[in-house]
Length: 198
Ligand SMILES: CCCCCCCCCCCCCC(=O)SCCNC(=O)CCNC(=O)[C@H](O)C(C)(C)COP(=O)(O)OP(=O)(O)OC[C@H]1O[C@@H](n2cnc3c(N)ncnc32)[C@H](O)[C@@H]1OP(=O)(O)O
Image (cartoon, rainbow, N blue to C red):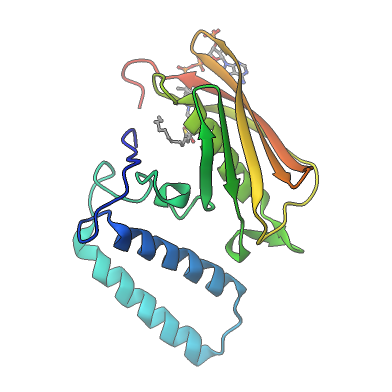
């Protein structure tokens, strides 16, 4: 996980644009399956296709350090389908600013994004910032407040800042905006790992 490549992949090579297209297709499938109420024969057909897809990838399973998903900084959300598609537009060692869009896959209910999906976004933002140009740190706590619903299919702004650093402790904040409206924010503590801590 420490190695995140910002270099766009080369066509015809592992991690090239073909990989980005596959992740994008997966995101589309996740949203389509979540939002669909197909008849049984279509569910059966799609299920069989997905089993074929899993089988096609099975010979290429690799260890964590070699996997492409999560390591591609040129792809939204690092090419990690757990993360909502997040684009970072500004970044330095004190702040991050980006855009994110939740879709049907991230639905909680009544048109609102799931609170857990928002927390994943915040952990990602704070984790990226806590580890920017510094020794590795992990989330000790993440306290989230939901101020109003976070809409789906809407480009949102997300910002993270370092609040203060005390020895191994890095306190950070993150906020999510729909236009000028704050939908959710978070405060987190990240603790720098000691030698031997995984
Ligand atoms: C690793 C990441 C790689 C980089 C990838 C970048 C991109 C990836 C982006 C994705 C990122 C995703 C990121 C993820 O999701 S990381 C995954 C989620 N997090 C974890 O799995 C972490 C699990 N926990 C641990 O490993 C340990 O607990 C750690 C290592 C965090 C600390 O265990 P350790 O035993 O070493 O430390 P400590 O407990 O003595 O505490 C240390 C200090 O903190 C103070 N303290 C404790 N609690 C509180 C509190 N509630 N309020 C205020 N202060 C508190 C405490 O008093 C002490 O202070 P002081 O006495 O020193 O003054």
